[in-house]
Length: 178
Image (cartoon, rainbow, N blue to C red; front, side, top):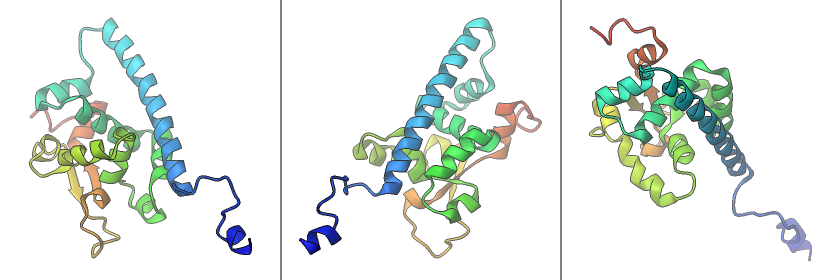
């Protein structure tokens, strides 16, 4: 009985997922809700104008699919929106990653493939050197500067959006049109 109390056997709390994981799921749900609102606004805006938003122009020009375009949109949002940055920082595994001010491959996979481990494994290829996002220079995948001798697992690598892509999407482009 004392062992049962110490091990938490008497509680009804689900011990399969650590509390931090539950926070990640809540953050992912909140980001998905914000994404749906943004997509609705985008659809309404596109219906009113004949010119596609810059992100969609870039996606078409580089041959990005919807999934890749959403990754770029989220990374742009993390960079320019304090609300998105705050949500993403809450999802990161450690304070070191928040200091690094970057997003990991694993975080992106958990946001865009939250329901299936199989989907996460399949979408890892989106971050390989031969993938469209990496080979076209839209993103860079690198080890964290804080963990230079750490794991080489792809899911722990940080993802950086190319500055020229960000500038083009937000309308500050000078080099991308040259």
